[in-house]
Image 1 (cartoon, rainbow, N blue to C red):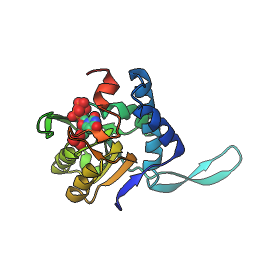
Image 2 (image 1 turned 180 degrees about the vertical axis):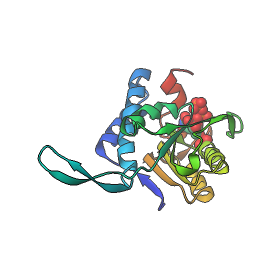
Image 3 (image 1 turned 60 degrees about the vertical axis):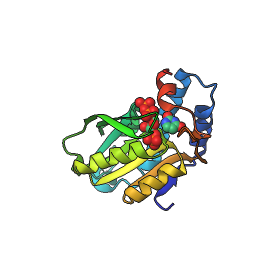
Image 4 (image 1 turned 90 degrees about the horizontal axis):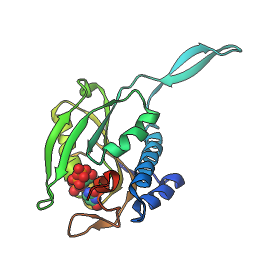
Length: 209
Ligand code: PRP
Ligand code: URA
């Protein structure tokens, strides 16, 4: 799985255990998803290009580095992706945020798109599609196709937990998209839930059922 990166930092793994625990309530769940998203953003931005600049420190002139101006766009998949946005924005506050609204039909498990609003210059941006769960892969696959149809060429996918089935779909349909995960779980159950997983991410984030 060459383009799949499982971010196994101890803090990410520790917090993910509490996220998975069914006894973790909405408030704590939301806070932990936010924290893990920030930690993942730290890892995912490792390859951002730098350029040299010259500044005056209080002591002397120094050649130092700044980001070379690569523009980033976050694209949360509604609704559960929203829970990851603020954590990432704490590290990349200038990122623009687009939204793709998709829900998974509970009968067919197929994604249904109901909303899309993106920054006007997505073709110039490195886009990070965010969703806590990559299950069958249908939602992320559709979202990425939608972005490519509108001109995006540089896309990463960031999820908390994935099933191998979903990873396979993205790898087949979008071999150009690197996938960043906090965990790669065992499989899907008969209802399309990731196991062991964390349950329904949207419901746990927003306290719905
Ligand atoms: C969940 C999750 C993903 C999708 C993953 O969303 O947040 O978007 O399911 O499943 P898939 O890989 O099989 O497509 P859901 O459809 O429950 O909508 P919600 O975020 O509005 O709760
Ligand atoms: N969507 C979720 O929220 N959880 C799963 O386990 C699968 C899809």
